[in-house]
Length: 314
Image (cartoon, rainbow, N blue to C red):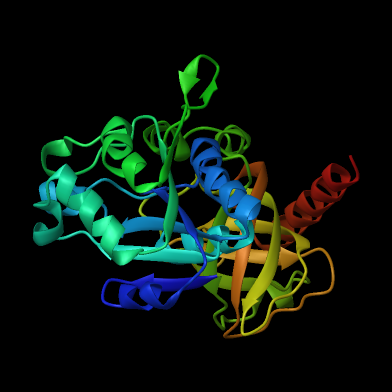
């Protein structure tokens, strides 16, 4: 996948193939977002074109509510990696600033058409709004683009348990609800991306070496031990390995000021210091707790490991 940011879009004028894009913030890339992006992927596959996603940075709330912006489920690097895994060819990241926000709905459509000369179709969610005052809708897109031979696909919202799946719903649940429920809404395990840091090797001393990485996100799951899966993505990609991962402040050992994700591989470990790894949070084993010494901690990790291995088998 190739990422183009504001200022780089002129490259699109050199492309001859038809381009099919999905447009939205897509924070979390949940099941509903996936249906919109799949629409663009399928349209591109049908005519041998290029699939793309147009998203915006930062979230519009940083402009309209700078004192209280909307927390994001995923930082940019996680969103980029998930789009790559979905098979998207192009990711267009438009700066969301005052100038861009001042465009009317009609001006937005004209801008979109100008930056993508070979635009063939656009996919959006049925609740997608754009332009100054959020005056634009899928109907407006159809009115302006259909006469230019550009198809517009408006994808229905996806519901679960009688409620629409939305980024807002996931944000409200993320810190308190079981990770399995979050994963059901996301349509995949919750993801983190981080760079392995060198620690004091205390995990190795008690027989459970870990990959230590800071986790950067606006909102995060609750502290605890999780069944996880991880792989390296930089400098090279590896196949996924199962692991147990502790997320928290390490109250038994050396308490940290910022939460740390410690990943103990249950298989051979392909990662080392400085590698960027992607971690999937699959299922919570237990909450984080403080133990009475290293022996009690070691016994608990053994039990966590056995629980994880049993879950993997089933």
